Image (cartoon, rainbow, N blue to C red; front, side):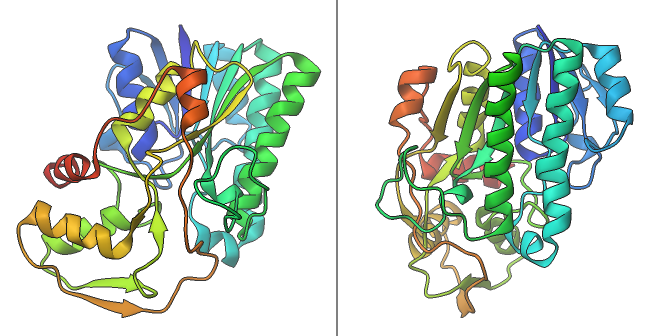
Length: 300
Protein backbone atom coordinates (compact mmCIF):
# COMPACT_ATOMS: atom_id res chain seq x y z
CA UNK A 1 0.00 0.00 0.00
CA UNK A 2 1.00 3.65 -0.31
CA UNK A 3 1.84 4.77 3.21
CA UNK A 4 2.92 8.17 4.58
CA UNK A 5 4.60 8.37 7.99
CA UNK A 6 4.79 11.76 9.72
CA UNK A 7 7.68 11.84 12.16
CA UNK A 8 9.27 8.96 10.26
CA UNK A 9 12.81 10.11 11.12
CA UNK A 10 11.98 9.99 14.82
CA UNK A 11 12.51 7.33 17.46
CA UNK A 12 9.23 5.39 17.08
CA UNK A 13 8.42 6.47 13.52
CA UNK A 14 11.68 5.14 12.09
CA UNK A 15 11.05 1.69 13.57
CA UNK A 16 7.57 1.68 12.00
CA UNK A 17 9.03 2.71 8.63
CA UNK A 18 11.55 -0.15 8.78
CA UNK A 19 8.77 -2.69 9.37
CA UNK A 20 6.63 -1.22 6.57
CA UNK A 21 9.57 -1.43 4.14
CA UNK A 22 10.17 -5.05 5.22
CA UNK A 23 6.53 -5.75 4.34
CA UNK A 24 7.17 -4.16 0.91
CA UNK A 25 4.82 -1.20 1.29
CA UNK A 26 5.56 2.01 -0.62
CA UNK A 27 6.59 4.46 2.11
CA UNK A 28 7.09 8.23 2.18
CA UNK A 29 8.29 10.13 5.25
CA UNK A 30 7.43 13.65 6.38
CA UNK A 31 9.66 15.04 9.13
CA UNK A 32 10.97 18.55 9.86
CA UNK A 33 13.94 17.03 11.76
CA UNK A 34 13.18 19.04 14.92
CA UNK A 35 13.75 15.89 16.95
CA UNK A 36 14.03 13.31 14.15
CA UNK A 37 17.45 12.44 12.76
CA UNK A 38 18.62 11.86 9.19
CA UNK A 39 20.55 8.75 10.26
CA UNK A 40 17.22 7.13 11.26
CA UNK A 41 15.83 7.44 7.71
CA UNK A 42 15.31 4.24 5.77
CA UNK A 43 16.94 4.77 2.33
CA UNK A 44 14.10 2.84 0.65
CA UNK A 45 11.54 5.46 1.71
CA UNK A 46 11.02 8.84 0.06
CA UNK A 47 11.81 11.69 2.44
CA UNK A 48 10.28 15.17 2.60
CA UNK A 49 11.75 17.62 5.10
CA UNK A 50 8.47 19.38 5.75
CA UNK A 51 6.66 20.72 8.82
CA UNK A 52 3.14 19.27 9.16
CA UNK A 53 1.76 22.81 9.61
CA UNK A 54 3.33 24.03 6.35
CA UNK A 55 1.59 24.45 2.97
CA UNK A 56 4.42 22.33 1.55
CA UNK A 57 2.58 19.37 3.06
CA UNK A 58 -0.26 19.98 0.59
CA UNK A 59 2.16 19.32 -2.28
CA UNK A 60 3.42 16.12 -0.64
CA UNK A 61 -0.13 14.76 -0.34
CA UNK A 62 -0.95 15.73 -3.94
CA UNK A 63 2.17 13.97 -5.16
CA UNK A 64 2.00 10.85 -2.96
CA UNK A 65 -1.77 10.37 -2.57
CA UNK A 66 -1.20 8.01 0.39
CA UNK A 67 -3.84 5.44 1.33
CA UNK A 68 -2.67 5.08 4.95
CA UNK A 69 -1.25 7.77 7.26
CA UNK A 70 0.82 6.97 10.32
CA UNK A 71 0.77 10.21 12.28
CA UNK A 72 3.59 10.44 14.82
CA UNK A 73 4.93 13.99 14.25
CA UNK A 74 4.28 15.90 17.48
CA UNK A 75 5.52 18.14 20.24
CA UNK A 76 5.92 15.17 22.54
CA UNK A 77 7.38 16.41 25.83
CA UNK A 78 5.46 17.59 28.91
CA UNK A 79 7.70 20.42 30.29
CA UNK A 80 7.91 22.36 26.97
CA UNK A 81 4.12 22.11 26.64
CA UNK A 82 3.76 23.87 29.99
CA UNK A 83 6.33 26.51 29.03
CA UNK A 84 4.82 27.18 25.58
CA UNK A 85 1.28 25.76 25.28
CA UNK A 86 0.58 27.75 22.09
CA UNK A 87 3.40 25.99 20.25
CA UNK A 88 2.25 22.62 21.64
CA UNK A 89 -1.29 23.28 20.36
CA UNK A 90 -0.11 24.45 16.94
CA UNK A 91 1.82 21.23 16.30
CA UNK A 92 -0.38 18.65 17.99
CA UNK A 93 -3.84 20.06 17.21
CA UNK A 94 -3.52 22.33 14.15
CA UNK A 95 -0.93 20.01 12.60
CA UNK A 96 -3.22 16.99 12.97
CA UNK A 97 -6.18 18.94 11.58
CA UNK A 98 -4.08 19.93 8.56
CA UNK A 99 -3.27 16.26 7.91
CA UNK A 100 -6.94 15.23 8.23
CA UNK A 101 -8.00 17.93 5.79
CA UNK A 102 -5.42 16.77 3.25
CA UNK A 103 -6.52 13.15 3.73
CA UNK A 104 -10.06 14.24 2.86
CA UNK A 105 -8.83 16.07 -0.27
CA UNK A 106 -6.76 13.21 -1.72
CA UNK A 107 -9.03 10.35 -0.58
CA UNK A 108 -6.78 8.68 2.01
CA UNK A 109 -8.47 5.69 3.69
CA UNK A 110 -7.15 5.54 7.26
CA UNK A 111 -5.10 7.37 9.90
CA UNK A 112 -3.20 5.49 12.61
CA UNK A 113 -2.58 8.03 15.33
CA UNK A 114 0.08 7.90 18.02
CA UNK A 115 -1.57 9.19 21.18
CA UNK A 116 -0.41 9.04 24.79
CA UNK A 117 -1.19 7.88 28.32
CA UNK A 118 -0.83 11.59 29.22
CA UNK A 119 -4.46 12.17 28.22
CA UNK A 120 -5.65 10.21 31.28
CA UNK A 121 -3.87 12.36 33.85
CA UNK A 122 -3.56 11.06 37.40
CA UNK A 123 -5.25 7.65 37.52
CA UNK A 124 -8.48 7.04 39.40
CA UNK A 125 -7.66 3.32 39.35
CA UNK A 126 -4.92 1.07 37.95
CA UNK A 127 -4.37 -0.36 35.45
CA UNK A 128 -5.99 2.34 33.30
CA UNK A 129 -8.41 1.13 30.65
CA UNK A 130 -9.74 3.13 27.70
CA UNK A 131 -12.91 4.13 29.58
CA UNK A 132 -10.89 5.89 32.29
CA UNK A 133 -11.82 9.60 32.74
CA UNK A 134 -9.90 11.99 30.50
CA UNK A 135 -8.29 14.52 32.84
CA UNK A 136 -4.88 15.60 31.51
CA UNK A 137 -2.57 17.54 33.81
CA UNK A 138 -0.46 19.15 31.06
CA UNK A 139 -1.10 21.00 27.78
CA UNK A 140 0.60 18.07 26.02
CA UNK A 141 -1.96 15.59 27.36
CA UNK A 142 -4.81 17.92 26.42
CA UNK A 143 -3.53 18.55 22.88
CA UNK A 144 -3.20 14.82 22.20
CA UNK A 145 -6.80 14.28 23.33
CA UNK A 146 -8.16 17.17 21.23
CA UNK A 147 -6.39 15.67 18.20
CA UNK A 148 -8.16 12.37 18.92
CA UNK A 149 -11.50 14.21 18.88
CA UNK A 150 -10.76 15.75 15.47
CA UNK A 151 -9.85 12.31 14.11
CA UNK A 152 -13.18 10.87 15.25
CA UNK A 153 -15.02 13.92 13.90
CA UNK A 154 -13.47 13.44 10.45
CA UNK A 155 -14.59 9.82 10.55
CA UNK A 156 -18.16 10.89 11.28
CA UNK A 157 -18.14 13.66 8.67
CA UNK A 158 -16.06 12.13 5.87
CA UNK A 159 -15.74 8.40 6.60
CA UNK A 160 -11.97 8.42 7.21
CA UNK A 161 -11.14 5.29 9.20
CA UNK A 162 -8.85 5.44 12.21
CA UNK A 163 -7.04 3.52 14.91
CA UNK A 164 -5.87 5.53 17.91
CA UNK A 165 -2.98 4.05 19.88
CA UNK A 166 -2.47 5.42 23.40
CA UNK A 167 1.12 4.62 24.32
CA UNK A 168 2.64 3.84 27.68
CA UNK A 169 6.32 4.80 28.18
CA UNK A 170 8.23 3.69 25.11
CA UNK A 171 11.95 2.97 25.21
CA UNK A 172 14.53 1.35 22.97
CA UNK A 173 17.28 1.94 20.39
CA UNK A 174 17.33 5.36 18.64
CA UNK A 175 15.63 7.16 21.50
CA UNK A 176 17.62 10.29 22.25
CA UNK A 177 18.41 11.38 25.82
CA UNK A 178 17.35 14.94 24.93
CA UNK A 179 14.17 16.37 23.42
CA UNK A 180 11.69 13.49 23.25
CA UNK A 181 13.99 11.40 25.46
CA UNK A 182 12.40 9.19 28.07
CA UNK A 183 13.91 8.24 31.41
CA UNK A 184 15.39 4.98 30.04
CA UNK A 185 17.36 6.71 27.29
CA UNK A 186 18.53 9.42 29.72
CA UNK A 187 19.67 6.86 32.31
CA UNK A 188 21.39 4.60 29.74
CA UNK A 189 23.23 7.56 28.23
CA UNK A 190 24.46 8.72 31.64
CA UNK A 191 25.53 5.21 32.69
CA UNK A 192 27.51 4.76 29.47
CA UNK A 193 29.31 8.02 30.33
CA UNK A 194 29.87 6.93 33.95
CA UNK A 195 27.71 9.73 35.34
CA UNK A 196 25.47 9.75 38.43
CA UNK A 197 21.73 9.44 37.80
CA UNK A 198 19.16 11.94 39.09
CA UNK A 199 15.78 10.60 40.14
CA UNK A 200 12.98 13.20 40.11
CA UNK A 201 11.08 12.67 43.35
CA UNK A 202 11.38 9.76 45.77
CA UNK A 203 11.81 7.06 43.14
CA UNK A 204 8.43 5.46 43.77
CA UNK A 205 6.91 7.02 40.62
CA UNK A 206 5.81 4.18 38.37
CA UNK A 207 5.58 3.83 34.62
CA UNK A 208 4.52 1.11 32.21
CA UNK A 209 7.61 0.61 30.03
CA UNK A 210 7.11 -0.88 26.56
CA UNK A 211 9.81 -1.74 24.02
CA UNK A 212 9.76 0.18 20.74
CA UNK A 213 9.82 -3.00 18.64
CA UNK A 214 6.52 -4.09 20.20
CA UNK A 215 5.03 -0.65 19.54
CA UNK A 216 6.07 -0.81 15.88
CA UNK A 217 4.35 -4.21 15.53
CA UNK A 218 1.15 -2.77 17.04
CA UNK A 219 1.23 0.00 14.43
CA UNK A 220 1.67 -2.52 11.63
CA UNK A 221 -1.27 -4.56 12.92
CA UNK A 222 -3.42 -1.39 12.91
CA UNK A 223 -3.09 -1.10 9.14
CA UNK A 224 -5.65 -3.89 8.68
CA UNK A 225 -7.10 -4.32 12.20
CA UNK A 226 -8.71 -2.09 14.80
CA UNK A 227 -11.10 -0.09 12.64
CA UNK A 228 -12.49 2.87 14.67
CA UNK A 229 -10.69 1.56 17.76
CA UNK A 230 -8.98 3.42 20.58
CA UNK A 231 -6.54 1.11 22.37
CA UNK A 232 -3.80 1.24 24.98
CA UNK A 233 -0.40 0.01 23.80
CA UNK A 234 1.47 -1.19 26.86
CA UNK A 235 2.95 -4.09 28.81
CA UNK A 236 0.31 -3.68 31.52
CA UNK A 237 3.02 -3.75 34.20
CA UNK A 238 4.02 -1.04 36.71
CA UNK A 239 7.73 -0.42 37.28
CA UNK A 240 9.01 2.18 39.74
CA UNK A 241 12.11 4.27 39.07
CA UNK A 242 13.91 2.41 41.86
CA UNK A 243 12.99 -0.92 40.23
CA UNK A 244 14.18 0.43 36.86
CA UNK A 245 17.55 1.21 38.44
CA UNK A 246 17.76 -2.37 39.75
CA UNK A 247 17.09 -3.64 36.21
CA UNK A 248 19.79 -1.31 34.84
CA UNK A 249 22.24 -2.57 37.47
CA UNK A 250 21.60 -6.11 36.23
CA UNK A 251 21.95 -5.09 32.58
CA UNK A 252 25.18 -3.10 33.13
CA UNK A 253 26.45 -5.59 35.74
CA UNK A 254 27.48 -2.80 38.11
CA UNK A 255 26.09 -0.73 40.97
CA UNK A 256 24.32 2.43 39.87
CA UNK A 257 24.95 5.70 41.72
CA UNK A 258 21.99 8.08 41.95
CA UNK A 259 20.74 11.18 43.74
CA UNK A 260 17.23 12.52 44.30
CA UNK A 261 16.08 15.74 42.61
CA UNK A 262 12.81 17.71 42.70
CA UNK A 263 9.67 16.32 41.10
CA UNK A 264 8.92 17.64 37.60
CA UNK A 265 5.87 19.87 37.11
CA UNK A 266 3.05 18.07 35.28
CA UNK A 267 4.42 14.59 36.00
CA UNK A 268 1.96 11.82 36.84
CA UNK A 269 2.93 9.82 39.93
CA UNK A 270 1.62 6.34 39.03
CA UNK A 271 0.87 5.02 35.57
CA UNK A 272 0.01 1.62 34.16
CA UNK A 273 -2.21 0.92 31.15
CA UNK A 274 -4.45 -2.09 30.54
CA UNK A 275 -3.63 -3.54 27.07
CA UNK A 276 -6.47 -6.10 26.98
CA UNK A 277 -8.49 -4.21 24.36
CA UNK A 278 -5.48 -3.99 22.01
CA UNK A 279 -5.08 -7.78 22.19
CA UNK A 280 -8.67 -8.21 20.98
CA UNK A 281 -8.83 -5.35 18.45
CA UNK A 282 -5.36 -5.74 16.91
CA UNK A 283 -4.55 -9.37 17.72
CA UNK A 284 -1.36 -8.01 19.24
CA UNK A 285 0.45 -8.13 22.53
CA UNK A 286 3.81 -6.91 23.78
CA UNK A 287 6.28 -9.73 24.41
CA UNK A 288 9.64 -8.06 25.10
CA UNK A 289 10.50 -8.12 28.80
CA UNK A 290 12.07 -5.05 30.39
CA UNK A 291 15.29 -7.01 31.00
CA UNK A 292 15.55 -8.03 27.32
CA UNK A 293 14.47 -4.59 26.08
CA UNK A 294 17.13 -2.88 28.19
CA UNK A 295 19.79 -5.20 26.74
CA UNK A 296 18.70 -4.27 23.21
CA UNK A 297 18.65 -0.57 24.14
CA UNK A 298 22.18 -0.67 25.61
CA UNK A 299 23.51 -2.47 22.52
CA UNK A 300 21.68 0.24 20.59
